[in-house]
Amino acid sequence: KQARELGLTTKAIIGHGAGYANFPNLEKQLGKELVSYLYNIDTAPAQNLDLEKLKPDVVPVVKEFIKRYAQKHNEPSPPAHATMGFGHAWMLLKTLDHAVQKYGSPTPDNIRKAALELEIPEGASPCGYGMKFAPPEHEYGGQNLASYPVVMQWVDQSVKVVWPAAMATAEPKIPMPAGNPLAAK
View 1: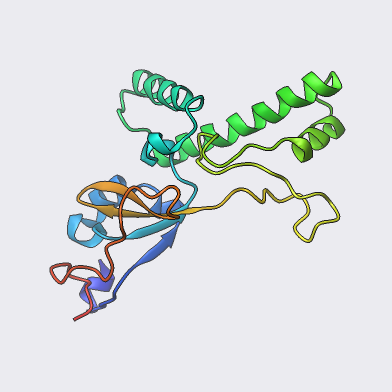
View 2: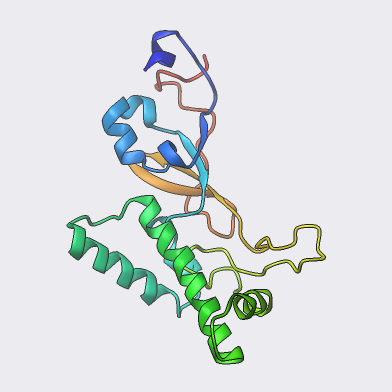
């Protein structure tokens, strides 16, 4: 609100997570005209992914989570962090299962070994991205080299994934359209 009051104009507003992850709530607080065309860079909430771009065996998992969440909370679309957390928990449970199946128990060392061995390709998780942890001697030791954020944009009261192309559901709208009160003149 202060940006508008002070006359700020811009081609785009890009945020990351936290307050930017819940576009509908932001719109209620700030108004449609200020929230339209905002960007958020974060893990993609499963309900915003194009399920056609996911591997067939993960699609029923995503649909079941969204269905159960809606039944329990009376919300047809879960908050972003609910499905993000679900996707991350799903990856952890896959890793724990691998540790138990291969090593017999989920000890810290067995979980670490399982995480380093397990490879989940892009599109085969509820997050859209894959999983492949770098070994300790790697420059990025312990990091998931197959994960990445997406760029989402709030357009016409709907979240659109605009990057990367492998997960995109729409083209980005940039610069902001002239009718937006924050659009650069």
